[in-house]
Image (cartoon, rainbow, N blue to C red; front, side):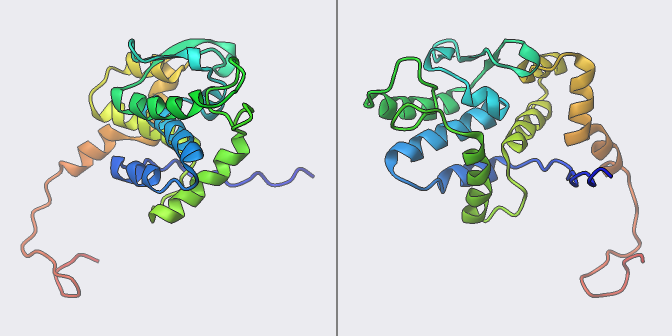
Length: 211
């Protein structure tokens, strides 16, 4: 018999304040703190998949253009993602620390002092720990930062075609399903706008609230 599949929880989108709190409690010496903050910024503000971020090389980031070249995207497709000035500031701080190391020129962007790439398992352990430190009760994981990026773009009114290219989806339909799953904006907006006149507003612990 096949083992029962692991339970899949629905995605939880973080608020900007929650992500800032995560970045603010990154522990460790200045070197690893700068690196991990920069990694979180890239996952959050560029919406990259964890493996895409960990495969980056320094030359893949163009601060002047505000772009990140993703060569190892899902399905073997390369793409260019946008990144904002705020995330680039974290990357610049990390680059200053990284430049002081004698790491090989082709070492991954996010590397150890010896130049070895950061392991995905390390990041998966780190994020729940940061959530505990920051007092964030939601489940925090790398793909959740990608969900948050996509949800925020949609809330800001960014064209769905642009969101699709930013995320590296193979089709626009995939993006539509993705966004409706993580942020059903139209459903929430439609139901929230309904009027329900009450003769008397319910009070906490008092009568008046419908059962």
